[in-house]
Amino acid sequence: MKTRTLLVDSSYLLQRSFHGAKDTFTTKFGHIGGLYSFMTTIRKLIKEHMINKVVLIWDGEGGGVMRHRIDREYKANRKNKEWYRKIELSAAEIRREKAKEESILKQRKRIQAYAEQLYLRQIEVDDVEADDLIAAYCQQYNNKEEIFLYSNDRDFAQLLDLNITIIFPNISQPVTKINYMMYFKHHYSNALVLKIICGDVSDNIKGIEGIKETTLLKYFPEMEYKHLSVREICQKADEMNKQRIIEKKQPLKALENLLKGVERLKINYQLVNLSKPMLTEAAIEELQQLEMPLLESDAEGKEKRGERLYEWMVKEDEFLSVYGSTYPNYIEPFYTVIMRERQLLKEYEKKNLTTL
Image (tube, rainbow, N blue to C red; front, side, top):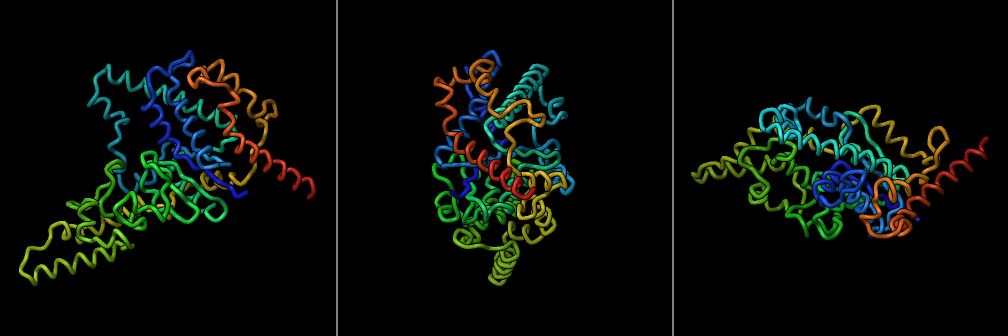
């Protein structure tokens, strides 16, 4: 059976799960809304897409530092910065924000512990963003696995391929190269071009002044059905403004800004181009380690995977009281992942025994 891999933009899913959860998801463990929604989303995705391998990919501590060296404004708009708190928030608001952060961190650690018990693979590397690890994984495994990527980040449209599908939480169907234009007003191959020219408000990446996505598609409607490179767009922009001058019309200011913004375009290309993931040596090593089978026990051989999960879900976290069903019922969809990982370990051990 071909490997069907679920890649999860885990930091995004945790934030979505935490902030979307009801306050009633509180047990003696504390608030478990993030934990519950995260794990239940993974469970649902495994069932819906017949997944037999899961890789949770997390933003590392200091993730984004390499892009920050290229553009000091990168993600400088994020409200979790200490200076933002001091200037913009009251003392009570600061306390509430810190309490939220502590709860998110606590639930993140619990999610990672659950994942270990359920044979869900994980990768997290200091100074490296999840985007780069996801892109590198897709490059490495595109021809070996059928990959389903769960994220809300439209940057990942760059990665679409015959074996790579994106599951956007707010789109009813998985997005592929074939159906992409049903949900977006441009050809999938222009996703990178749009980000280079228009920037990205969420990551504080500046675009060319006066050009938004709608503006670009208005002046270059062929982007809806075929690929146009940044160079081709600039050439067309130059021709359009020259023609307007011949016709004794004012050149379009937005296109003038585009032609003058070459340096900004070069910076943005480095920031958003996922064909060249920004990885450290440690990240490359961690990605290579994903080739290895998961061990059934911890490093000391004292505890087997799965041994503590029942106790956590039933007693410590009261997880199943929120779910309202039995442990076997909740765990059942994860068996396809567990059995595949155990089989890989058996094959690895058998192969190594025969070579001794």
